[in-house]
Length: 292
Image 1 (cartoon, rainbow, N blue to C red):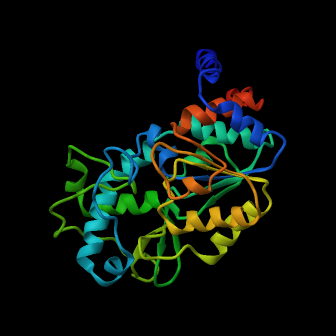
Image 2: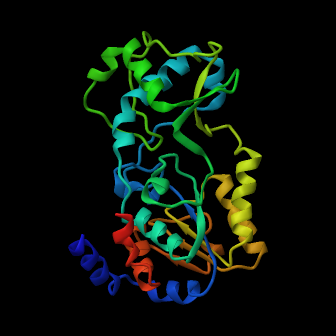
């Protein structure tokens, strides 16, 4: 633990551009928007970064209209679930949790569905696109813990657990080529269609959730965007809200984003390094020990 903290403190002096972030943030209330780039250091790939998968995520219309699409989705989701759920928070997640505890940030709006912010210790998290650890019935609205659905999938399809050479996708599943015999569990209450409690492509963010996100931005003085290319409309809408409020916007991301020209500061860097250094520079480094 002490060695890890020493490494962070030493690295803090070498992160280019950290001084400008500290100057802009110090004494202000910060809202944070995170994307897939925050979780890549936890072993979860992103959609658009270097080496990212070119696969097409499940579309809601296909999932609803096609039993075969549901077989394909749940086969891949089940095979990938163990690796996805075993992922651990990285230094970027821990830094954000430490800064929240120190009163530096108001909270986190996450475009990710991995739940790693909460596991790192963040308490004020808006899961903009939902969370994969929950499953809902589209017919009766009953909610289930994902672990129970996974046990049922294993019971119905034991051969899926024997597949190897797993290549995890950003949304937690893998490509399973032969899924025609997969038995998909249904709701234990009404026998309805089960779906993970996440926003599929083609769906809208629930109004209540988006309202919570906009409320967090409204209460802030600075918007910090970390690890997001802002290719998804919900992220751009939050950035535009911050611009209307005339607040500074910080973007930390490897690669170009759709918000670069609107940012007060754009830092081309990895989020774990920058957020860790930022937490230490702003006086929240001592809280790592409590979190870890």
